[in-house]
Length: 421
Image (cartoon, rainbow, N blue to C red):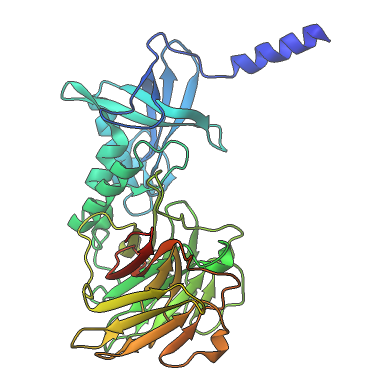
């Protein structure tokens, strides 16, 4: 028995990545906080796609597939060492070629790093990967995010690069670089129709797939948006394709519910068994996005959250919010502007959880909307809403409430006690 245990242990150890003589640990990048990174030298054998390479670790003869941590490139359908033979979704070949160029310029030498080394469900090592450029190591994911080749996919354990990747991705989106250029793959269908996407990622109460949704709004005043064949995805590989014949009237919205249900009218169901969208707002710098692609693969509309770049709101200063934590708990929202304010596309945010305002919730100048935390929504009227919460939501000791857009930008906030806006 003892010999069997020893043999099993030796076999398990033989399957682990061989340690490099040059392995070291330290900050993941200058000024990085949190857990230190472990670094290991490697040599790239081949480029698989825009977020995966095959390497031989220093000190080992074995070849490992390495999946870049925290970025997501579009998918290849035909992999090849020859560029002319590569095929895939729009943007996939460009991202693959860029990775290959950067690796070759680094003479195939790379540096892998991770705060908590791990492998994915396919057995690939999941690491940040750096190439040698201009005499120093530069993170490959950082380059890809800056140039707009990849989507950011936050990580809950290895968090060092979360904020930097998120900011770079949002800057690339603002500049419409590569993936964010809606005509990269050619002029698409109804290219002139303005489209808005927004996401409920943190509904009030316990997060479930049934509570999350993505809305696609046709902002054209005259033209119907024909969505058949268009698809929505999150930062992972999950996607939903709208069925043939899906049409969104001028000014109207369709809702894609993350959970299961029977599609009908303007409601569609993704059928996922787990939540799709990360909650933002803690020290790990988490966030996410929803992305709408047309049938030829161009990214046509998106929402990234939390907003970190060029964040503003047209209704900044237009609303006054006041919390009343004494029973009955309520929040009043007053339009103090000289023009109507449409609250559709906003939510009442309490400790981060979002309670969306329904379509048609418009406040005229001077008008007040009162939102009671408890009570039945069946009693809603034009100027009174009931959230129907089962417990107390506004603690007497202190807290905050906001009217906020779904990307986290808040035009109005109120805090009391030890709370702060």
